[in-house]
Image 1 (cartoon, rainbow, N blue to C red):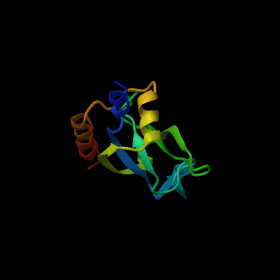
Image 2: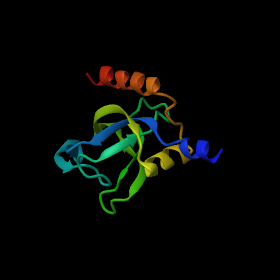
Image 3: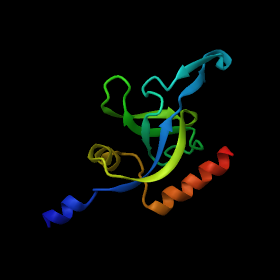
Image 4: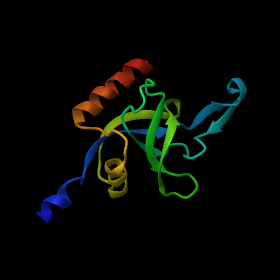
Length: 124
């Protein structure tokens, strides 16, 4: 029975993206900043499914914080994320955060890929 418990949760499908290199900032987007306040450009983020019915404008994500390099769970604007893809997650800390969160989680590979298709359609 312990063997089954250990194997449960060793991987999970997830929507993954990277933090954009540059993004507009300030009044009317007059300035350009690198990454976000909490994430460096190119940081891989593990995205939760839609949580609030806002059209996925705000996303709960897990990623390495730019200051401490520890994993954090934060909400970011979807415009700050690019290079969307569906992948299997194996990192134990990310899996722990995904599975212990009070947020809704991805159920299957099909759910992630279907949602990924809708992102690509809406962004085109």
